[in-house]
Amino acid sequence: MSGPSNTRLADLFGLAGWSKGELARLVNKQAAAMGHPQLSTDTSRVRRWIDMGEIPRDPVPRVLAALFTERLGRVVTIEDLGLVRHGRVGKRQGDGSTEQQHPGELPWAPGRTAAFLIDFTGMDLMLNRRGLVGAGAVLAAGSALSSAMHDWLHTDPALTPDAPVLDNPLHADPAGFDRYEAAPIGSQEIEELERSVEVFRAWDAARGGGLQRKAVVGQLNEVGGMLAYHHPPHLQRRLWCVAADLAALAGWMSHDVGLEPTAQKYFVIAAQAAREGGDRPRAGEALSRAARQMVHLGRPDEALDLMKLAHSGAGEQMLPQTRSMFHTIEAWAQASMGRGQAMRRTLGRAEDLFVAGSDEETPSWMKTFKDEDLYGMQALSYRSLAEFDPGAAGHAQHYAEKALALRNDGRERSKIFDHLSMASASFIANDPDQGATYARAALKSMGSNSSHRTWDRMHQMYRLTAQYADHPRISELREELKTALSRAKGKGGGSGTPA
Image (cartoon, rainbow, N blue to C red):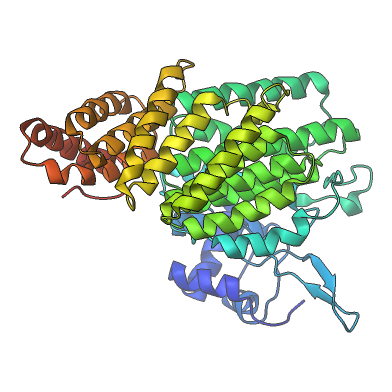
């Protein structure tokens, strides 16, 4: 089947720098290595894939995905290559025709979530095994992401078991079966998976995302394979929720170590997995993580776009504490844009909702949003606003102190962030001695933590010490920080060279 040129494949082909003949030879070699020695591709066939939009038969799309993943040093899926045979059918247009979604766009086609999950995690694991960087993809704009996902997220919740019908080989998805031998599981196995999520979540909060990311991605890959079997609806729904939890955590860990496009894709996977399991609030929470990522990367306006979708898409089932947490992210984005009045109003709503929901049972993914986390986000918001209005620094110190007084549950990364909020606010408030105390407290803990985000935040704080460079204690601190930041940058942490 041929048609218009495959622009996605053409663009990636151009980035890879191969000739068509070279790619044909690589396909044959890689296919043989993957157990398909009979496959034979030539230059003319590669030309038809690129110039005529011809979609090759399996296993060629997966072979190409593996080759481009290794070549470009980031996860490349068959969707990214535009090689999915069945695109999503969009809304009916005025003339009664249907609009086909490009296979690489978000969200991907219904019935493709499990297959996409398996493809993406498999490629991510391959990058991990071979020591490739995996950060060269393009981060989608928040507005583009929210526009693409709006209609899909607002449809009525319904379980979508996108698994092959095992007793009818005509409905089987060969991609899924090549990766995982589908088999039924029961409630006990799902309970074990749910407990494993809690263990991974606690480890991430204590030590950062770098040490267990591969294990989480591997577990998510396994769950994707489990979803290739039709379980009873109540089990399938729970399995989708496990997939959502693992994908959100994989995204958070990826964000924590600077793999930003990879993180964003996992957040979208988490949102769609939750949505297919009928859990709209969980889908909204996954998108809120993508919004936090945008604020961290200096794109607060795009974060607000994503938060609008997270709020509306989560639906009426969303509990007050979840709404409270959403508002803290909005407030941080507003503060990062210097919108002090809006930030204060939003934080006020967050406080009211947090108190209103304090007696309610919260889902597992919200149990880490406690009093100290509310205070920590208030401190971060005021600290961000203090860049525009130094008078806000005192409020940041107040909330950071309250957060630190409650940090006793082993979540060391959050404690580091609170120390850095306090240190930064102290420097802005013209209290360099206190700033130095908290900066050193943060630095002491960062050596045993794999979070790159803490180094990004440390770099922001380091800037604030410049005005006190003649102060003996601060001069000494600056040298310590400069050495630590340079060392962290050499290991892949941090986002700049201290001056």
